[in-house]
Image (cartoon, rainbow, N blue to C red):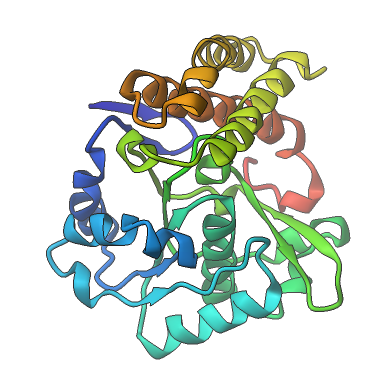
Length: 272
């Protein structure tokens, strides 16, 4: 098992979801809300994660995440969070499930309404606390599991990005086994997302050689393995390397992002 200590603690390997109980204990989480979509439940991935936790079957689940998370869905999930006495969030799935979980964690920790935290209006300075977040991706490409932000479609129709270093998940668990059998179209789409993140890190005008090095390694892995992963969803080597490429792409571009904006006044002097 590989443990990457970077912007957050990342566990990476086949079967590594087994560390979830230990990490929940260390975070002091007794009753996290699990945010997923219907597809994750139908694919049996929720059951695999719940089976790894001793009291997993009793944990509350919100499975109404839209393909593009919305403010209304976030508020619905927040109602479940509060009604069930939750103390944190597990975002399980693709970027939509993890982004929705982040929105719930922000609202649970700092209160609403959500649009008061809009970064372009200086709202990031108003973020006081974010409930603990554990991110478990089931695709290889999104990057939300280690990123500083999330995207939500507001009730008025605007699509907003909310960002703060406080939004980085406390723990990220990358288990390539959860991607075995992912349909080819989703594998290709999320895989190219990972490729794009790696290229962004390499081409960014921000000078950050370590991030560029990570981006190059991730791009090499994705370039060599994406076709195999798309054509054979059960190929373990291809799945391992695509998830590592996704991990590296996300870490690289997020590092660039943090370096570029951490001194901005909108971040409230988080790093000062």
